[in-house]
Structures are given as structure tokens and as C-alpha cells.
Amino acid sequence: MRFKAAFKTLLSLAGLAAILSGLGTAARAEPINLVGLGDSLMAGYQLPPDEAFPARLEKRLKDKGFDVTITNAGVSGDTTADGLARLDWSVPDGTDGVILELGANDALRGLPPEETRKNLDAILARLKERKIPVVMMGMIAPPNLGKDFAAAFNPIYPELAKKYGVALYPFVLDGVALDASLQLEDRMHPNGKGTDVMADKFLPVAEMFLKSLGS
Image 1 (cartoon, helix red, strand yellow):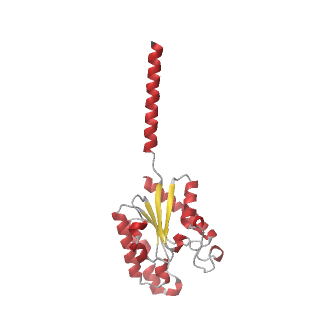
Image 2 (cartoon, rainbow, N blue to C red; image 1 turned 120 degrees about the horizontal axis):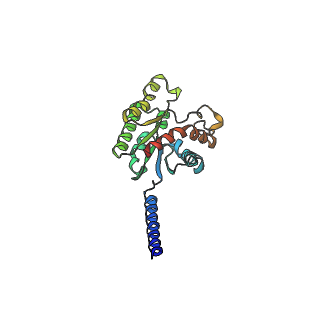
Image 3 (cartoon, rainbow, N blue to C red; image 1 turned 180 degrees about the horizontal axis):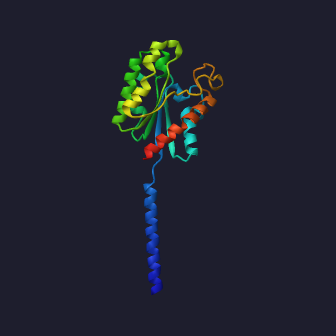
């Protein structure tokens, strides 16, 4: 009789352990879903999908042990106005965070910096309203546009990052912009080696961003 009672107790404990294990599995964090909202620098202009910046970054983060997916919502040629217009369908419900990279085409086309600021402000405001955290990748005005343009354009990113309390990576093409070996023939877009450099340099910022989402 004692053996049967002990056996029943053992079965009960085993069942409880199985239940607790199942609860632990159910409570385990889901994969982190990021969206890379940007232009050709995000899209991977003339590159295979696996050589675009989001794919390169996702691989590095997974190698670091993060359970993360990064949806590439980059569209070549997009300005900040285009990004704002497609914001809600490019960043669907369930998105845990956004890597925002827009403004390069605004600068290349010499669009009024106040319009760029207004559009980025609206994007950040909308994402804040939706409670979606953001890390922003900044852009620097091309030197051929002159000092006045640069003086109006370059402060946009740090000032908006401060206003909305978001992380800022100052220059999306850091390490790539002045190295022809890392660029396509147009000398504006990164090649596969260039997106590797972009991902390597951005990786510490991305890690901190993901850890902040977890907290």
C-alpha cells in the first residue's frame, strides 16, 4: 500500500512538473519583430536580399543569441514624405521596434530641410502614439549643397532624437561613404562588403536597442 501511495505521489509530482514546464514554455518570450523603415540604403539597392543591411544585421544579432527578425521595409527612392505616407502599412501591428532610416533622398534632391524635419517628426510622433520604440539612423548633407543647407539639415536627427527620447546612430553610411571598395559604381550605395561594414558598426546600437525592448 505504501508503495502504491508513493507511486501515486510520484506521478502527481511528475504531472505538476510537466504542467510547470508547459507554463514556462508558454511564457517564453516571442521572437522580437523589428521593421527597417527606409530608402535604398535599407532596401539593398541592386543587391540580393541576403546582402541588404537588414539581413546582414539580423544574422549578426542571431549569432549573438537574439531571437529576432527584421523585416526589410526599405523602398529605393523614398523620401521622408514617402515614408510617412506608407508608415502604417509598412509598420504593421505587432511590430516591437523600428529602425528608421530616411532622409538621404531628401538631401540628394535638395528638398527643404524644414520639410524633412516635419516628416520625420510626424513619423516619430505616430510611432510614439502606437507605442513602438524607435532607433534612428542619421544622415549628413552632401557637401556640394553648401554650408547653409548643412546647417539646417544636419541638426534634424540629433534634435528629433532628443525630442522623442529615441536612440540615434549618427550616420548610416559611417565607414562606407568615403571608401570606393565598399560602394557600387554609383559611389552612393553600399555593395555587399559595404552592408557588412554597416551591420558591424551598427551592431552594438542594435544590441542595446533589443535589450531595452526586453526590459
